[in-house]
Amino acid sequence: MKGQSTPSRRRIIISKLFQFCRQIIGPNTSAENASASVSSEPLVITRGEHGISRKQFSPNAIKVLYRLKDGGFDAYLVGGCIRDILLGQQPKDFDVVTNATPDQVKKLFRNCRLIGRRFRLAHIVFGREIIEVATMRGHHEAPESKNQISQSSTEGQLLRDNVFGSIEEDAERRDFSINALYYSINDFSIHDYANGLAAIKAKQIELIGDPETRYREDPVRMLRAVRFATKLDMSIAPNSEKPISELASLLDNIPPARLFEEVLKLFLNGKAEANFLMLRQYGLFRALFPALDKILEANPNGLEQAFVQQMFQNTDKRINADKKVTPAFIFAALLWFPLLAITKKLQAEEQLSEYDAFAQAMNKVLSESAQHIAVPKRFTLGARDIWHIQHRLDKRAGQRAYRLTQQPRFKAAYDFLLLRVDAGETEHKELAQWWTQYLSQDINGQKDMVKNLGHQGGPKPRKRSRRRAPRKPAE
Image (cartoon, rainbow, N blue to C red):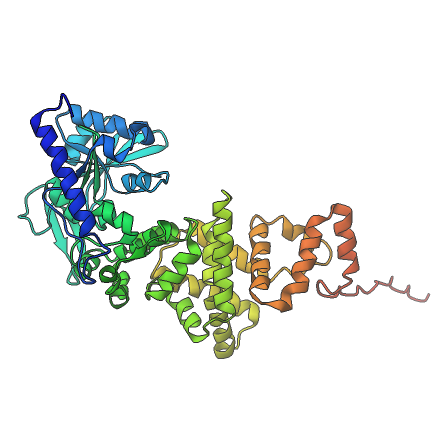
């Protein structure tokens, strides 16, 4: 402590006292109905106490912090990047919060673009990396001005939220206590405003403030609670968990395009199966995929449940092995049983052939799904191809098998067939084995396999009648 000023020494003593007190009254010993709250005097963890080095941060994020500091503004790294480093994980994004307004940020950075309507953000672009800079948010009840606009729906959802405030107010506006951690570039300390370090230690996802109010402000927080719980191997705190099932229907008010982005985060993060099961547990899956949820409810632990879980297990394995996964395959699987149900209904009600009913059902199931999740056309086209090829896989005679393998989505469609068999569709087991063997052969082996099919792989060829030359008239 030698050489330090009296205020600095007092600050360290106070921070340690706060740390000791918060460990005593942390989440493990709090009442079940207690909520995380923000303190005006944060717990300050000095550079020597938290052990985080600037080398663990993105160099571009550090550049942004210093540019803002040199411009006369306060700047902090905030949220997930601090949380993940404390948990020993590598952050994907580095977010910055500052007391500079978006327009002031733009003046400091030539490589800046402003985005967002609900809340204005600055994106600082460094090649492929984007550092997101947000102005410290204030309470949306604050008086409106030209640069501070807030608007809520009748359900309490925030529609516009351009209200700026202090760092204490910004911490109160954070969703979870584990995300209210701020790294200061001034002295390299961490400021904990909502007992986030104790929540990390207790492995709990805890909302800041009244859970029902916060979920109504932004229903997507329910999806984020699930995603953080599985990603960080934590549980949702009882008070934060309690209102989720009752408020799940509020997700109907979220724009379908935003829900598509949230679904990708849930199912492409290596924890898809765990997220699926937790979404079902809290009734959130129903708001995303109502048709499939209805089918799963009608037949618990049936073929449909096995199919979806197996798909998510396979997805997790591929992602954790750094292999590519296309959203087209995931949505093709999630809408497969609703597609079959609509096909069957159209056949019965409109007396259509299976092919025509299947074609109409594809349009209908995608149209109904788009009311909840806006899947981009490039992925719905991929899902259509996967579904179409399922009806062509048993047509293998002549050149059909070879031509089918040249289709861009054939490999995905073949994997889809294997998934159906693995889930319990044993009637297609022989067909799946044939294609597996066919794909392992060279061109001559493939020709032999097709020859050995006879006519079982396709329709019988029509016999051509020989034309006879017309008889010459007798002279």
